[in-house]
Image (cartoon, rainbow, N blue to C red; front, side, top):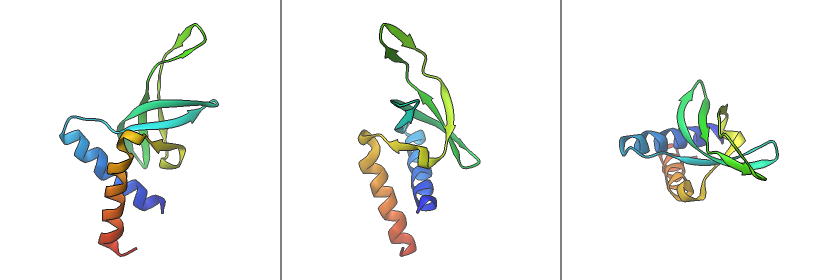
Length: 95
């Protein structure tokens, strides 16, 4: 299942890159739900650039991290298109 998700995400990122757009994700880091965008893929891990967030009165920097596809969710704004790519892959390979 993860391999098909990986290839669907790869297609989505590639198509968005052609349109000069990003794919947005949500990940839980240190107990906080953080939003970010995918920058690139390297050896099965996705480099995600997280947005800055506020913790009390302090504004923390976002930072970047490599994460596997199991460690994050596709943001709801991109999830429908991701589901379409996933369904197309299932149909191509009769899974």
